Length: 211
Image (cartoon, rainbow, N blue to C red; front, side, top):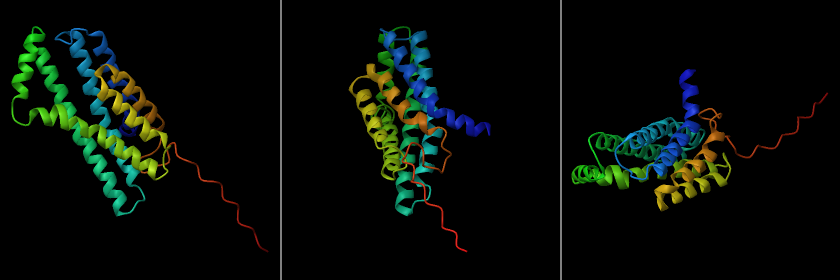
């Protein structure tokens, strides 16, 4: 029961933690080592880890009662999302480590350059890998909308959140707010029930009784 409650709370806590990271980043003008850098990246780390149960829940809802193509589509979104979670988790860990070992921004830049110079590190954890997080989220929410299991505006709001975040890191709080608006209403829908926010079926007339 506690695990289920924690998983549902993640639908709110995940976006909130990401929004907190974006707000802390805005007030940290130096973007350098120090309490703000550490606190912000701890919030980012918490936020992205909290999205793991969100992806699992969305994947279960998207696959519930569907045929093989639907289950494969849901599994694809789930795998992409979890790969993105892993990539951003490693990225946040690297950023925390670099911040802890640096005295100023110049030292941080040198350490980042050294780490990212290793083959595969930059695409895996800083460019391509994190994109899978957003792609998985768009695919899963989009599939629920196509199944008429959630409101049609929700995948559009996810796309808007991704777009503003990609446009400027200063807009991370806006993107997090959009994700919160999309996900918060889904937290009380049991996994395997994809009815959150979707159209409610019309009531069926009661069968006529015969003598």
